[in-house]
Image 1 (cartoon, helix red, strand yellow):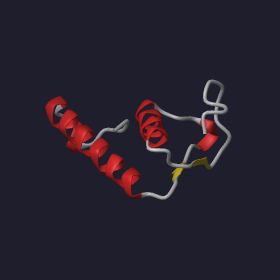
Image 2: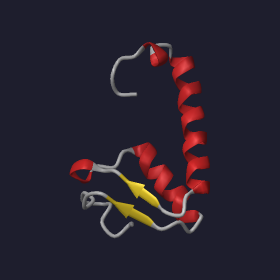
Image 3: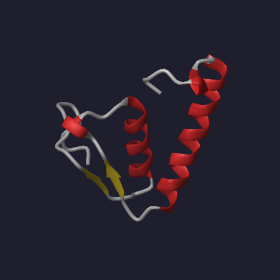
Image 4: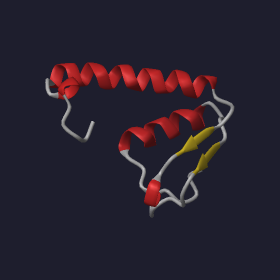
Length: 76
């Protein structure tokens, strides 16, 4: 939601969409055998960090496509 798009121009609609996406991602994590974090250049955003924490609480194995940036090392 970092680039302009009609779906998130209205802040109320954007918040509702974000909540729906968060729920969808959690359900996908629930179904997954493991979680693969796609993190080009090692970057992990705030929502992805929350999803990692959720997966970790469920005991899901977590892998990363790239080494993580400072502060994330060792968290996978």
